[in-house]
Length: 105
Image 1 (cartoon, rainbow, N blue to C red):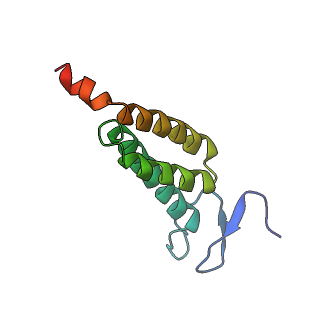
Image 2: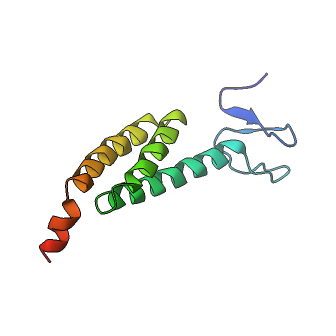
């Protein structure tokens, strides 16, 4: 019987703890850590493209799509915050933020 704090390795099938990134028996990387790494990459690139949307508004579309992926991968708070800031930065970029920013220099 499986306890609440264990899962099974997808490669060898032996029971391991939930927060294990690598199976101690066969060394296989567990799927949950792979998905988490992809979510973190989506989040990093989402913020980069959101900030770039202040200067190049079309990059906001990339950030918008990445925030939707993050929300679908069950990181709703991080995805929603990114989505809101993407919309704000996209709007500011479309209304000439970069002209005012570079004009002040």
